[in-house]
Length: 78
Image 1: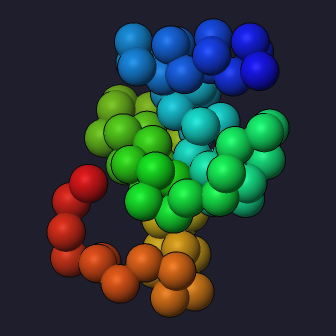
Image 2 (image 1 turned 90 degrees about the vertical axis):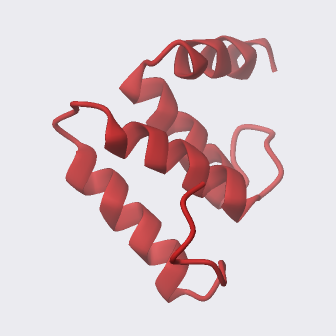
């Protein structure tokens, strides 16, 4: 999963698109990643806090996880 290592590095360095990909991969268990809602929320939050045109999309994705009751902590920042 060398590609995901590169995407993770880019996300850590602040790439909004990489944060989105990390969030998607964790939310859906794609790209060889184990499904993990807390990690998905972390990356969607990181994406949403940046000055990014898709911040609304990140917020929507976070809301989907909360509404699906996949996370019981909607009031806690990750």
